[in-house]
Image (cartoon, rainbow, N blue to C red; front, side, top):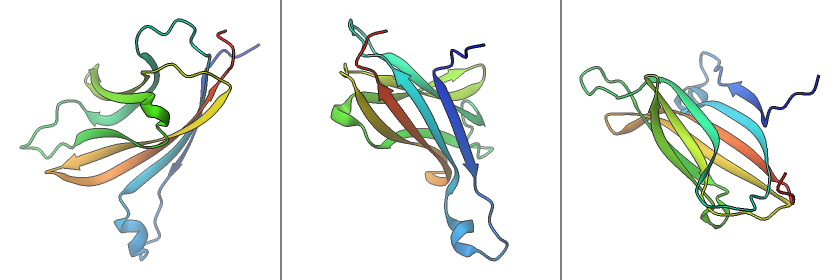
Length: 141
């Protein structure tokens, strides 16, 4: 049976030794690697949603309970500002949506490094990093 998935993901989770202060103080908790293939969009009329980052924290942070706010950003690899990331709330969860906002002609390989920052009282308590390898085909199909 042929799988029709457009993405594959590998996730590494931080696990520090008890006395490893550098590891403990590093705000990065997970690093993920995702691969996605895209066509060269022939009729690019509006942004195309390509990656969804789902946070494990509930939507709508509360100042009283110190629920973290999730801040998404593109750290590097945004070739010609061809991508953006917006925050959305779905089913009570915070979701970062990476969108292709400009046409890209393939063949091309791009690596987007994304950050999902958990912010409490203006300070990043921890963050997850997602490396998205995007392969753009020269074909539209």
